[in-house]
Length: 174
Image (cartoon, helix red, strand yellow):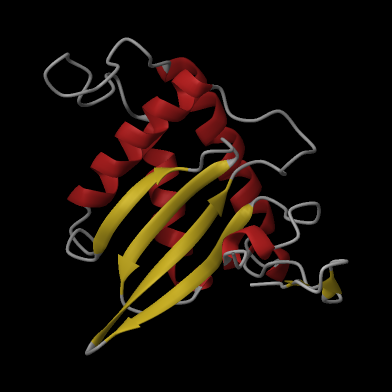
């Protein structure tokens, strides 16, 4: 079985940032998946599960209510490795073009008093939330993005020589 593209990015070199993971052209329109990476994979602790869950609820709500973007949002959800999130939008924009949306969404976490959608009727595990830790992670990421806004490394996956495994599979940058 062929290794999918997102597993073919060298995770030992990824830094926190906003990366275009893939662009799918579907007839008359495109859909873009962004890798919104808060943590360096395999090099620093992952995001606390309850905080990750709260960030998912808060930012999904923010994105789907943003007057300029709500009709473009298809999906916002956590990565299984707990180092970041995936954002899927209609259209084909660069990572730099969605920077302000991501920054604004993470800033909104600090203003949140109650995590939306945290009742048994609204959430599959409504007790697993941590708003204080979500705010801590969001503030850390906001500070990082603001400090690195002009650094191309936070918008482009790291480039490496294409490695070939012993069985001939290519290890690609995305």
